[in-house]
Length: 389
Ligand SMILES: Cc1cc2nc3c(=O)[nH]c(=O)nc-3n(C[C@H](O)[C@H](O)[C@H](O)COP(=O)(O)OP(=O)(O)OC[C@H]3O[C@@H](n4cnc5c(N)ncnc54)[C@H](O)[C@@H]3O)c2cc1C
Image 1 (cartoon, rainbow, N blue to C red):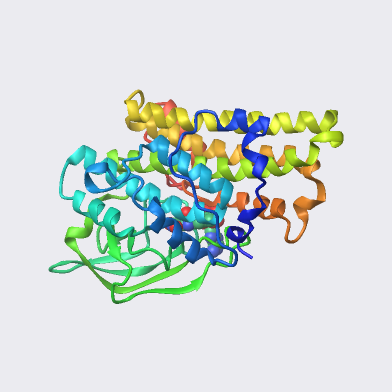
Image 2: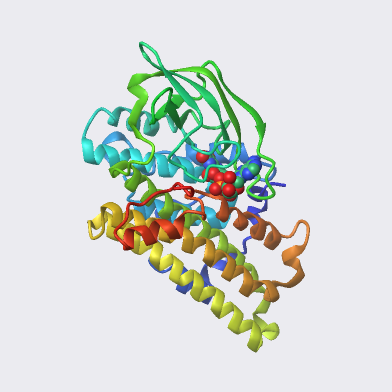
């Protein structure tokens, strides 16, 4: 069963529970996920959500989208994370990529609006393929190879794991230009000859996220679809903006997932079953999530207002990403004795949420690099995402 199929396990009273008054304050979104239909596969659920307006959420209104800000997209991701972790983690890749494209358009006012308009018009999804087999501790470098041609590049490589593998219309991917130290970032139609989906990702959780292996064999890439190129370790406005969007949306997504787990825990101790140690543990888990949520919304607000920018924003985003992982572990530590062995039970919603939330440790930037990156900024050194460097 996918986690999508467990959607109905949320209870009607969850939204009014006192801990929800604390946790939900300040998260505002007009978009709400429709409930999953019984028996829907992960890919079907993702398609339905995209067609229901999600794909166009971050696209500016003048191009037919909802014009949602970073904070508003984050609130939508959080709502989806509570209802359906797998769909949320998959659509997070689309939301972050399209959010970055919208931000790019705001900064450059170039022809990228045509892509944004196409996404809003068709509800097309954009996957983001950085990870490669053997680990990707430095998300800014790539082993896939792009050979220059008269019209653009010919790309060969494997992207794995990649969410939205069968549901995306476009794939945003990285590749190293042959014989140089330059990396390109380009949008590649998923229907391109030579681009195939070969096998799902055999993960324990997030099983409805349409995550699989993408293989590219001599895929022709039109130069007009290359929207960024440069040496692998050069940090520019696109890297900063991409990291901010990714870290904020990822944190909001898992804030939603962990909130659903907290709902499970609180449900267990209301009434006669509530007594001292459990109340304290729930209080601890709740304050952890409250702090994470506040930091997430604050970063979104500060970047949007310009209060923080450039490398400081990058360091703050990387810090948020690492703190998210820490918070996940602390929340789990607190709720484990409260929920008890249901957390370890096959088919239990709480156990699904535990395993889904474990995925948080395996998103970029790698936890091998986060603290070093924040420390480097604070001691006046260059930020690097290469754990070897
Ligand atoms: C639910 C989910 C969805 C995802 N969706 C996407 C997506 O859509 N697009 C995308 O680009 N990425 C996606 N990712 C992948 C993510 O970006 C990571 O790059 C990937 O999971 C690798 O994580 P890691 O923990 O192995 O970290 P890494 O930092 O890559 O590796 C950690 C350490 O393990 C080593 N290592 C890793 N793999 C191996 C191996 N096979 N053999 C030997 N050593 C190894 C590394 O060298 C390193 O020392 C997703 C991840 C999750 C959890």
